[in-house]
Length: 218
Image (cartoon, rainbow, N blue to C red; front, side, top):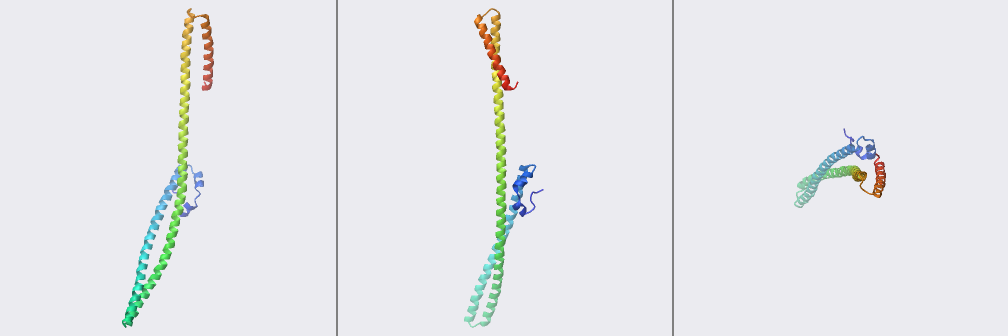
């Protein structure tokens, strides 16, 4: 189902209002662009046909104008030769050609008005389409930024998790070494001063581990 049903619907459409009410703005805006582009194709095709018809009428008008001048010259020639009868016939042909020329002139004026209106309609649709395309581009860029921001946040999260894991791993290695030293001290190795240093270092490590767990929410 289309968003618009006729030319005036597109020109008078409140794009922002339509998008605000749409369940899927991106789908809606794509549908708008498609309908506007289809309408433009029809309007341009119609305008081209009118311009072609106008060109044909203009050629016929010029032919009638030439006929008027030709019969005028022939009438003068006939008079100069003493053939008033031929001059009358020539003037009758001139009169008919002139009537045709006047009729075609009116048709050309009307055609110019129609073509001008058609071009104006095309410009209005093109302007509206430009607005819709701009909104679509903004929507695409906004979605792109959101995707990039989400990817950046995930990367930072993974980096933070990796750093926390590495710190825990280092602490575990340090604890293992301390426990090994304690085991050696229990066996009678190491001075009393070394034993107290180990205990003090264990307190520092325990405090650091507690801080890491607090930051990690564990």
